[in-house]
Length: 281
Image 1 (tube, rainbow, N blue to C red):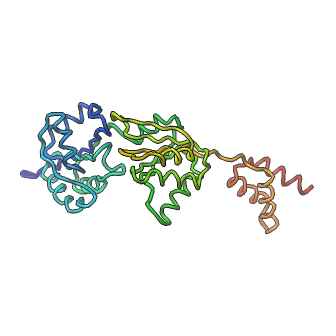
Image 2 (cartoon, rainbow, N blue to C red; image 1 turned 30 degrees about the horizontal axis):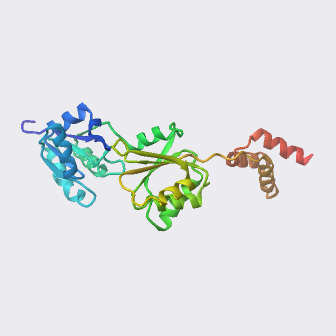
Image 3 (cartoon, one colour; image 1 turned 90 degrees about the vertical axis):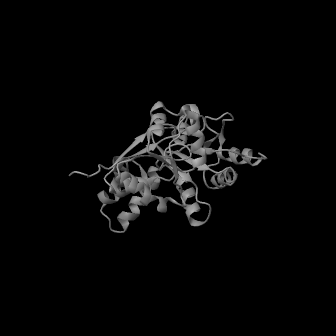
C-alpha cells in the first residue's frame, strides 16, 4: 500500500572484549552506517566510535532502563530505521542486555541479524585446553542463598567444561566455594583481561586457585573462570546388581529392574542381567 513503511533492521553487533583491533570491518561499517546505536554504556561505545571515526547517534540501553527504551526502539524499527545494538563487550544478549530488544523487533516484523565477533566465553574455552566440544556457560554465580548453592551443586557432577564470569571482588569467594563442593583437584583456568595489554591466564587446581588468588592484594579487570568437567565414575556392577535385586524383591519384573538400573547407573544391561540370573541359580 502507498505510504506503508517497511520495518527496519535490528543488528546485534559483537564488540571487542578488550583489544579494539578485534573489531571486524563489517562491524565497523554497521556502526558507521546505522541510523542509531543502542548501547549498554554510551561512554564506552563512544570510545569505540572514536576509534573507527564514526559519529552515529547513540541511545543508552542497559538493565535499568531497557523497558523504557523498548517503545523508542520499536518505533524506530517500525519507521524503517537500521538499529545497531551493542553491549560493553562481546555479543549482546549473552549475559548482557538485548533479549527484550530482539523480541520487540520480531513482534514489530523487523529483520533481526547479528554480526559475529569477539567472545570471552569462546576465547576462554579455547585457551583453557579443556574439552571444547561440549561446554556449559553459567554466567555469574548467584551471590547467595539457595540459588548459589544450586549453581555450585550443578557443577559438582557436570561432565562438560563449565565457563563462569566473575567480578574482581567476588572471584576469590567463588573459587573458595567451588573448592569446598567439588573435587579440589579438578583443574581450573582463570583468565583475566583477555586480549588486553595485561592479559593473564592462570592454570592449576580449584584448591590452588582459591589459595593463589586470595594472596593477590588487588584484583582488577574482566575475569572468566573455566572449570574442567567432572570425570564420570566407573559403573559398579556389584552395586547395580544389589539395586536391581531390591527392585525384584519389591515385585518388579527382572527385565524391568535390569533396564531401570542399567539406565541410571551406566552398567551394561547384558552384564547386569547375567549377574541377576547367576544369583538366582
